[in-house]
Image (cartoon, rainbow, N blue to C red):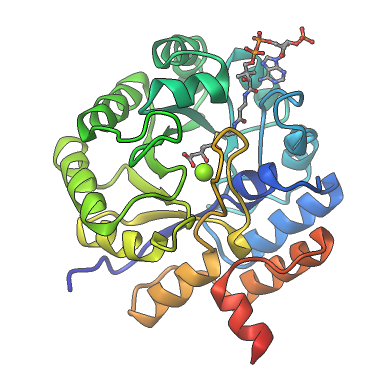
Length: 299
Ligand code: HMG
Ligand code: MG
């Protein structure tokens, strides 16, 4: 089996995870969560979102979270930014990395950010060039790459087109999202193979939700296509407020268990991540979906 020697794990739990929880965690709890993930060795932790608190109240206070998370040399702490207002707020809070987001399907993008895909790109043009001049690292997300909750099937050509436009718009990295967890490995091989051939493997990440239990199989398919950046969420927290039925992201613990077992290095301490998730599960008052955590709890 052809696998990368090392994978960069991007933990999106404090953002993608917590944005969809019924219970909003306090700034203190979110800072502690991020600090524990950074201490566990995660090279990238997405700490919050500078979106409208009317749309996503769970991410209110992301400025305070970003200001307080202890930085660590070499660790990136991106925040989600939908528009110029979000960029200005993120910069004021000291952001050094941002993530813009759009989709491969029009209806999802409209529901998520009240804009067409073209309008989203027009918004990005209002701040991404400046961000680059400011030395800010920029990630671009493409949602609904393997299926849309409103439009159904999504053509690989549409994914390719949006991903290419994000690179052209100035993104350093593009994360290919299975927002509602419908992808299967053969489809992942097809889409990621095309993207790799078009854009090169180094700036591509995959972002799977585990709604139908296919996320780890999809990661394996992506690794075999040469992708070595994988998003996941501590504990398997997560979902998307504008994607009905979207359950948690692939759990970081489950991903690490598989990668380490296959001899793929990550530099992340699995038990330390599990401890961070355990604290969040207690704060939320529920058991988190990570299979690894469940196996530990029942051992
Ligand atoms: P809108 O209502 O069309 O915006 O929302 P607007 O420009 O008309 O402004 C309306 C109000 O919002 C104004 O305030 C603005 O100042 C304010 P008012 O005058 O009414 O008091 N506003 C803001 N406030 C704070 N921060 C901002 C901001 N912008 C405007 N940045 C908007 C447009 C994009 C703001 C809104 O639709 C929004 O915030 N959407 C967020 C959606 C979201 O966070 N979705 C989840 C993240 S994406 C995801 O999970 C997918 C991903 O994980 C990958 C995958 O799985 O596929 C990344
Ligand atoms: Mg997501």
